[in-house]
Amino acid sequence: MSLQLRSEAEAHEQLRALYQALLFNQDCFDEFKRLLVLYQPSAEEGDDEPAGATAVRERLNERIRGWVGGHFEALSVLQVLQWRAIIVEERFTSPASPWRESNDN
Amino acid sequence: MNVSELVDELYRAFADRFDEPLRGHAADLPRTLKLAPEGAPSWGRVFGDEVTLGAPALIAHALPGASGSLVRDAVLAHMLAVIDAFGSDRIEGDQAEASATLLALLGQVRRERDRAMARLCGGVPPPDLDFSVADATTLRAIRRERAILRAARSTELDTYERLALEKQGACWLASVALARAVGEDERRCRAVRATLQSLALALQIYDDVVDWEEDLERGGAWAVCLVNALRPPASSRRGVVMDATRARIQVLHSGILRSMLERATVHIRAARMRASAIGAMRLAAWAAARETRLQALVAAERRSAGYAVRAHALAAWAGEVLA
Image (cartoon, rainbow over all chains, first blue to last red):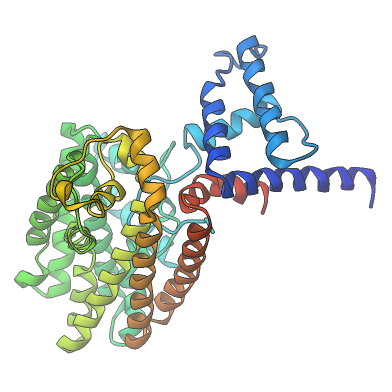
């Protein structure tokens, strides 16, 4: 396996570990969401990440390392924003529907 | 043509009959009703399944005599009835502004729905297939639900399920009308109705589980009302006002989410068996897949309270990143 493939596989495993931690532990999920709510990115696209947001992101990465119990590549600004969109703003989930097919299991 | 494409084609034909700006508003209706996050996606993609808007097309597989035009009328009547029911629910719940445009559009939705139903019935529909009767029942149920949820009133499961069913009273009329139109006897028509009722209940309960915290933020959640019914008799028939944090702890510790998912499993199993019995095999297969998923959620919920809610919240991310 090439170094690049191994690195991608490791990154995938880390994300899977984070997913499992969030899925099976309500406290992890709650804290994850709370920190994402606190993460306030810059209003203008392309601007630097504000110091307060950097501190929140560092705290988030520190907590994730604790949950997954080992090495975890820090979440980037873009990744935190994507998580925020999904978990806080719910921009990637459908709204309530009594007839909806969902993807979870 | 698959069912989602049929839904889109029928809705497009409905919307294209209007002049601007109503045509534009009709195209934008999923977003107006907060059923699509952004843009104006087609109705066929809003729910991600064929059942919600296309149920009669799946029931038609069990009806050999159903012609293409009858099925199209049944799907049109059904999908417009469901869209109208969502509209009423959103307006009643203050999730959509009751603007003159939206009210006019929903009025057109109901008129077209009724025209399609009249074609299906070969004239004025009989009272048990009359959408206006179902509309009144739905509205009463929605308002009663709001009152119960806002007061966090202690509610037993059977009352909750009865209300859930009343809220969706329009969801099986077109399918039953289609069965009658092709000459099915009353026993088969009742079976069609029972199949769709079981489906509606299963999916409504599932939805009330995964969205319970959001519902609570908006004014009330069924999980809280059902938990209150588990409490000692002294407080059993009155609303128990509690803050969100306390409500959350009580719901998670009570096991009520698992109980609700178990009920959803019972109903989806009934839907699967009924669909199979009437010969709607594609619908039965869909229900079987849902049953398997619900069983897995019940087991996971038993191990870790709140699992279903978290799984739902993480589903989009998991689908993108871990697939």
